[in-house]
Each structure stands twice: as structure tokens, then as C-alpha cells.
Image (spheres, rainbow over the protein chains, first blue to last red):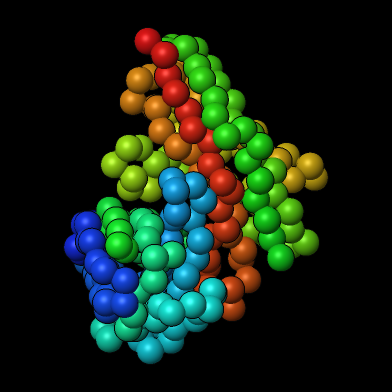
Length: 111
Length: 117
């Protein structure tokens, strides 16, 4: 069966510090991968999606970036965090069935 | 661009009763997918049910069923025999079938469901 992992689970970072959130998927190959952000417990906003290694599309221009160094690894990064980057970050994967399955999420607080 | 609207920020239901959560969407596409996800306090998104637009039959998963009205662009979720564990935020989501859109989901703002014992 497939599983998706995210880490860290929680993170508190000062403004201006770098960020690296990691997402990995097990039990499948060549998945589509997604990063979403959820602010204030409401709707999810798609940040990036990837249909293959080094194939990444950005949905919202901002100070975040994404990379996919391996088939089942998706990384969300920032060189300098802003207060507005605080939120809950969810990674998801899909393949074939078109249904997206989500990881447990990372709660990021920028102080 | 497609949009998804959930007009009920909060809903409440008595345990063992039935509740219906509303969702409407806007699209010019004829083929797409619709989903309901549940987000409990742990905040992990859990798939509840999915519907393919080309299927006329409404999807059903145990106590969960949908009323899919394609012409009206409506996709409501019915929860029967509500249980305390059903308390959560529920999100309606749309997915285009167009390949170059990458399968991304467009979410509504959510409906927070509380279940009273």
C-alpha cells in the first residue's frame, strides 16, 4: 500500500530564516505531487505541483520554491521566511485513479 | 477559471440524524471529478467520497452519499446516522480532467460540522 510522509510535523522559525519541508511517498512510482497551504483552518491553496522529476509548476508567485530531486520526493523551500508564510502545509500525491491522498501536514509558525 | 463554493461555514447535527452539506461549483468543462474530503482536528485530509462527472449514478460510501446535479453544478454530501467521529471540517473539491492542469484540486472554503450527543 502507499504511504506519504511529511516532516517536520511542526516548525517554528524566525522571520528571514530559510525553510525546507520534505515530503516522500512510498509504494508507488512516478506519482504527481502537490504542495498546498492552508491558512487559518480554511480552504487549501495549491502552491506547486509536479508531474515528474524536475517538472514543477508554480501556482502562486511568492518567496517559496519547490524541487523534486527524486521520483518520490518533493521539497518545499524558502530562502527567507515572511510572517505571511505561517500556515499548515500539506503534501499530496496522485496517480492513475486521479484521487489525491494527503500527508499528515506540517504546521509552520513564523515569528 | 473553476471555482468551488461552500455556502455553509458551520453545520450542526444530532447524533444518529442525517445532515446534508452543500457545494456548488463553476466550470465550463464537461468532464471532471468532484471530491469530498474530511479534515478532523488532526488536520490530515481524508478522502470521503469521489464522483466522476460522466457518471450519472450518485456515489455512495457506507453512510456517505452525494447528490450530484451536473446541470445545476451542485454536489452535496449527505451523512446518514451521524456519529461523533464525523465531527470535522468538510471540504468540497474539483479536479479538471485536462491533463496539462496537472490534476490539481480546487477547494471550497469548508464547512465545519459538529455532532451533538
